[in-house]
Picture 1 (cartoon, one colour):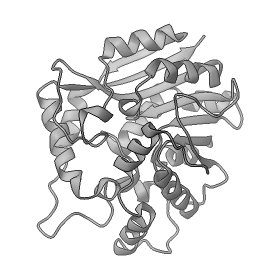
Picture 2 (cartoon, one colour):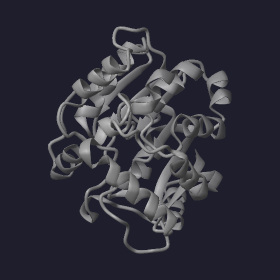
Picture 3 (tube, helix red, strand yellow):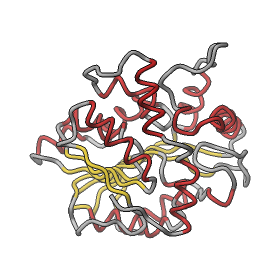
Picture 4 (cartoon, helix red, strand yellow):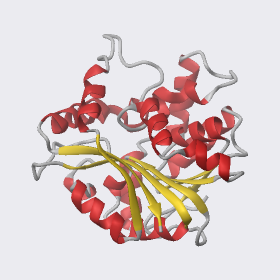
Length: 285
């Protein structure tokens, strides 16, 4: 893996990679009694499903994209997971549908941790990681049957380039499946949030702006759903950490000490309508 060196890449890496992420996750596995055990992707869900709705949201998006049908029609289905982090969704898709998944992520520490976790689940033949920028994807034309993204576009400034690249690397008839945080009715959100410490690193567009960009890139809309209320309910159901601290495995390992504040600000921004959550599927023309 190579390290992207642009100022943009350095800013994203600085936000998402405080300290040695792989070592923190290994320690979390040890503390949870999972060190050296044969792990299934579900065992890692507390730490690798870095989006609202967790494991269930990943499963629902796969169903919405009719991934089982795609996998049945196309043997050895190839999926690109844009901004896939440590690979939670990728391992789910590989294990449930037999897909080959490439995770493209700008944060090298996430890719390194993802490779470690993928090896622990025995899925290294099906899931691989590539450090790179989604605005200039390092893949040939028409390489994938599905481009997948969950909670990654908030960090991507040139979304027109993102969707043009998604269209380019998809085969004709391929699908774009997304589950994304977008702008709400208020112009300012509460910082820090999980994807950004300040406004300079957050690039939200409204749902209609996103919809227009995607269709303008050459996609045909199949499904568009506002799941903001579902996302807020998921946050509200999550229990507060016990008095002796968070569990051994959890999303706090990905963001460090700032995680509780980012969690609270996300809930507040959802409650006040400052952000929205959209789930959608498009088809490449």
